Length: 450
Image (cartoon, rainbow, N blue to C red; front, top):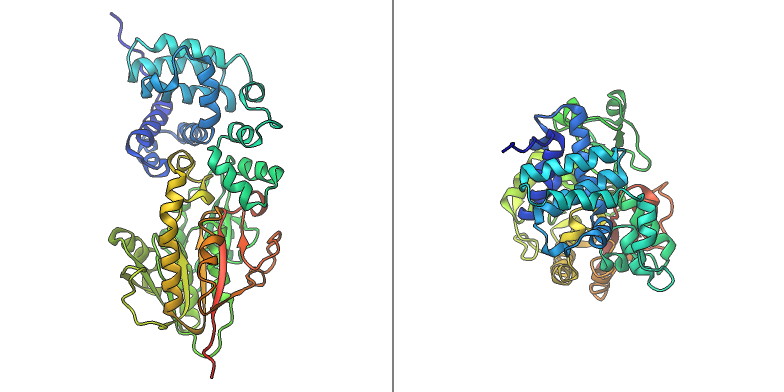
């Protein structure tokens, strides 16, 4: 009896990453590095595209595969389904020859599952190869006129409820909803932040980055660059941070406050990117940032990122340990569904449920209420989420507007940024701004009368 032919190392690494995502609820960006370490640069790039591309396209691929398999997908061995998805991505979205994609998938099945399912994998993937992706989507997606949400969900590989949330956040504009979904399926650039007083953008540009579009402290690392090899990143003077995350922190720092401006608070600071930027800005102004984080392991990440520019504490933002009205500026980067960062964490679109949004809403309201209690009269609060879902964004703000706060027009505090809408709040979008879909509202606590 002949032994199974070994699967090639790049596809095997991709398979193991996909299996970890499915079995352990792992995030691809956390499991991939160790799997890629033994590979050549070329094989690592191939495996990376294979994993992230498969996770992004999974919704479309499953609809196509379901019509070609003799068995329902939920009745297949999940390991076989992983191989089929990886094979479909190679055939429909990568420049991989049919024989190479099919033969390597069959070998991978034999290596990881056994000889039995290899015939099914061979037959299904040969059927997949009969058409290109556009032709398959025309056949399997619901008719746009009859079911526009279903059509967008299949053609852009997002759950239906996420498509509905994007549509609502975009005022019902289906064409723009399609553009937002398409942008979620594009590979995001690696954006760096030069932490003020510790690094300069020019230093990053001299190392091969290019200027970013909006943030004055951002630079974009060209494709193929590894940020950890750059001295400013290695020395923690710069970091990897999406431009949208930079912009909302910069906006909070830009709002003028009268009288004292010495005490800043990040009420739920983990994992620390915004805290590191705010802490650097605070030091330059003679202020001090307190970075509060409930989870000790995340607090350690904050302390590592912010260093001496912030006082990192383990604290519950819903039950503040500090006295009321102690701070001049407060950031609430609330825990959320993360729907604004699906291009970076594509597996999250299949993991999240509408119930997650409902469960997070009371926490978000509680954090914002406590932030308002924590800021002094005349001080400012920034409410931020990495989600455009209305129930995590504007609906949360609506619940606190009866308190002693006024909503500021946030647009002037993002100078030069285009397409910010009618205000007063701001919703950034990948398809408009090239950033994660960050939401921002700025609130000023009203001074006491008399």
